[in-house]
Length: 318
Picture 1 (cartoon, rainbow, N blue to C red):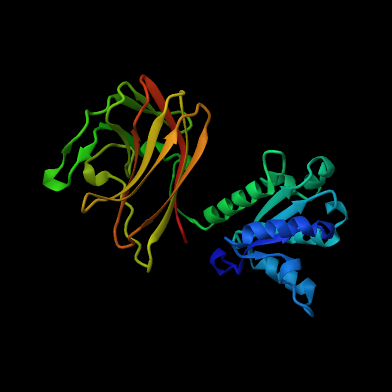
Picture 2 (picture 1 turned 135 degrees about the horizontal axis):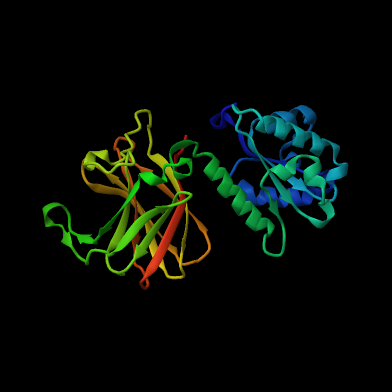
């Protein structure tokens, strides 16, 4: 079953005694997603075994509540087995997410049922049920962006080129520079990490994506064509990881139309950590227009300074 054909976003698999926790999770998710939980949706007279199996088959994600009661929860174990079988079918794209409620009392349980191979969540003093629900909804949103337009993890990071630039004001013939040109260098490091070293805080440093590794004329810029079938706005998701040397950088993601030389969308994030941090940006653009993708480094707090980027992915809702 294709992801777009699914009736439910989440199916919550839980031991019977832990229905109160499952209902709390249901309440946190139900306002933003379609959630199936037996205690909330089964009607009197339903063949519950058939209804539950059908609902899970029609779900995008199975959330498995792992508690001290899981070992004795026969029907939950059946649902885990079905979820694993569904996830092995490449045509199904079903996802399993273990939510470990009490890690100390469930030691070994995730390994026994094969759940240790799945990235999950563990409730703790810092990860509440509310936090877990937020992350589950974020995962759902990402899973719906299935068409990969660009992925630097596939060795394509070398297609980026870096250019010192400046800020502009006005449009067309009235446009003029409003800042000095940035000073700095750009390199692609081992592992596809993009590194910008800034020697002046003014202006901006642009990272542009080209069709091929060799730098050619302007028409060699990577242009993403219009979507012929789209009846509504194209929904795009840009993901990357970034870090600095402790200074602060503004990271701006830009989609620009080539024919009109106009910005279709832009969004800025702040990078100020020495540790790798994930950044996600979501855009809607006119499906009738092509676009090219750029990342700007701007508003640098001090120099010399370094900004690094990796795992840049551009996906489209499908």
